[in-house]
Image (cartoon, rainbow over all chains, first blue to last red; front, side):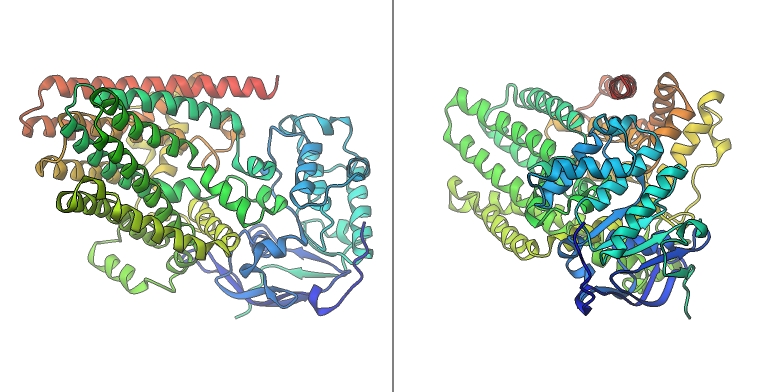
Length: 222
Length: 418
C-alpha cells in the first residue's frame, strides 16, 4: 500500500456549512462544518434515518448539497468530480455490484479504468482477496455470491485503486467475525500509511480499534 | 472501452433489444411506405419527423438518468470522453430504430422510382434526428442543477404556490420535474419548427435546400455540447443525483401530491394477485401519471386529426403506440428501484407475475378504448372495424408482453444461477 503521510492542506477534506434536504421536507443535515485529516479515521454514528448515508452520498458526489460545500484541498469536490474521485474508494450498497462479472474481473476493470494496471497487478489482487478471505469463488460470478462475499468484493473494489480517502457505509454488514478482523487490519494499515477513513456503523465496539473520533448524527445545527 | 461496457449495463438485454428494434423498424417502415406515391412518401417523412421530435424530447431524460448503479461509475471513475460514450450508448437502440425506419421509408421508394428527391429527404431526416437528439442532450444533461433548486424550493416557488392555490392541491407532479417538462416541450417544439422551416425553405428556394435549418440546429447543438463537455462529469453526477432523489423520494411520503390507488378499488382483480398489483400501481401513481399522459396523448392526436395532417395509416397507428406505452409502463414497475429482484420473487412466481402485469396493463384499457370509440364516432374515415382492431390489438399486446417478459425473466434467472 502506498505511503500517503503527506498531511499538507492539499489533502484535507473540509465540510463547510453543509445542509441537505429532500424536496420540501425538513433538513436531514443542517449547517454542518468539519475537517478531516490524512491518517485519521472518523466514525459516523447515529440511528437509522439520521442522515449518515446522505452525508456519505454527498461526500462521494452521488448527491449534491442544498447549501454549503465539500472541499478536497482547495477544490469544491462537486465542481470537479472526476478529479476528486481519483483519490476516493467507496463502499456502499452491495446490491450495486454487477452480477455478471467475477470479483477478480471487477477489480481488474477498476484498476485498468484508473490506469493502474501493471505486471504486478494480478499478484496484488490475489493478495488483496487473500487478506479479505474471499476464497476461490472470487473467480465465479458475483450474482452467485452470499451477502458477505459481496461485501468483501465491494471492500476490495474500494481499496484496489490505492485511494487517499475511504468512504465506508456500513462496511461490516454481513461479515463474519474473522472477516471483520481482517477488514479492520487492512483499514488500520491504510490509516497508518496516511489514508483518511470515514466510516458509518451501528457497532461502536467494532470501531474502537480504528476510529480516532466520532460524529453523532443527526447533525442539525440551527 | 471496457469501463463504458461495465457502466452501460446488461449486454444480453442490449443485444436482444437491438435485434427486436432492427426487425421491428424494418417491418414498420416497409408497412408504412407500401403503395405510396412519391409526394405521399415525402409527406409521411415529415410527419414521422414530427413524431421523432416529440419522442426524443420525451424519452431523453428518462433514458439518461438515473444510472442503475452510480457506484460502478464512481469506482471506475471514467473521464468525460467515456461518460459521453456511456450517454450516447444509452440511445443505441432508439438511434438504430430511427435510422432504419427513416432509411426504409426514404430509400425503398427511391430504389423503385429512382428519384433523387427521396435521397435528399433521407439526408435531411438524418441531420434533423441527430440535431434534435443532440439538442435534447444539451438540454437534459445539465438538468440536475436547476431541477434540484426547483425541488428544494429555492426556484420556481412563486409559480408552484400559485398553481397550488388556483388548482385545489397542485398539479400532481413534483416541483423538481417542472424544468424537465419545460425542456421536453422546448425540444419538441424546436424540433417540429425545424421540420416546418425546412419545408418552407424547400418550397421557396428549391428541394435541395430543405436541410439548411436542420444544419443550423445541428451546429448550434454541437457548439453547446462542446461548452458542456469540459464539465460533463459534474453534470452526469448531479443529474443522476437529482433524478435518483426524484425517483426514490427519500424522506417524503409522496411526490405527486395526490392520493394513490386505494386497495379496495382493485375489486375487479382476482384475490391472489391483488396485493402485489396494488404495490406496483401505488408506486406507479406516485411516479408516472399514466392516465394524464394518455389524455394528453389523445388530445394531441385529435388536434392532429382535426388539422388534417395525419395520413390514414397514422390515424390508426398512433393509438397503437399509446397502447404500447401503456402496456410497457407496468413492466417498468417490476424493476429496481420500484421492486428489488428479491421482493419480486417473494411476491410470486413467474406465472403469477404474468397475471399481475396483465391486469396492471388492463387498468387503463377501459378509458383508453372510450377515447378510441369517441375517435371512431367523430372521424368519418374510421369504422367499427377499426375500433375492434384497436381493442384486439391491445389485448394481444397485453398478453404478448406478459408472456415475453415472464419467459425472459425465467430464462435469465435460470442462466444466472445455472
